[in-house]
Image (cartoon, rainbow, N blue to C red; front, top):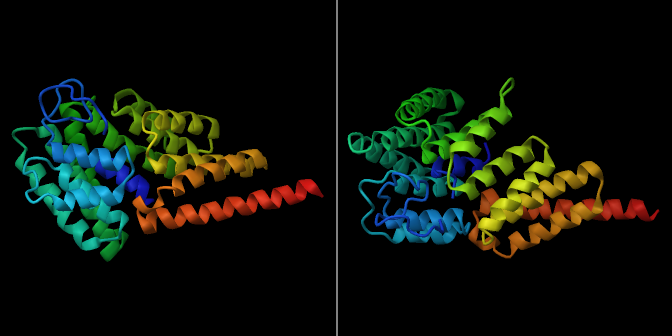
Length: 301
């Protein structure tokens, strides 16, 4: 499982990953226009920094600077855990996964939907930690627990945008990589019910990239960039799509466009996770540059 997909499916958790005008007098809810939750401003700010601006370093520093964490919002520790995952900080991941579960249990009576949703998220995070420490067998039991909590949340409100965003990313991941699955059904569900829209577009772009449908992947990543043009990960994603399409078609023009997008992402590379994003981005840039040189040499012979 890639760390970027993991982040979105847990932190938006997903992430993942907001610049919204306040819709009510409540603290900003980045997911809902109807029946918004009173999500703390600290969580909203961190969410925006991560998923709109793609600035992991600033988000981590901001979250670390908060002396008293919100006691009734399980998304707050889930964001910390997700960043820890990208940094392979397993101790922090373990602590914040348990905090996510603890807070999710505490809001069971007040908000049963988000309680079950973040019990799923917390156990998913804990399962990632178990997988790292003890292997796949240790994490299998967690998966069924995650799915059970998702089902409970869905029975409360199957159209809730936050639920559909987080579960939608996980469903896309499973649908793309498991045999006999239906990725289009997962895409349709994400597109119909999830929010915010730019994260929906980003998730669908990743799905179509992995399904080798490059035209649709570009369509959706372009929509995401229109809404959140400051996020370097989106340019990295567009570069990946163009690179795959350029290689398949042996098209130097597309490869040069991929290179251009990688270079845009590299202008903000220091704000991205070093192991999970910076290194692969630099490696892919070198790879596409070699492809351009190779194809240009062949065409000149």
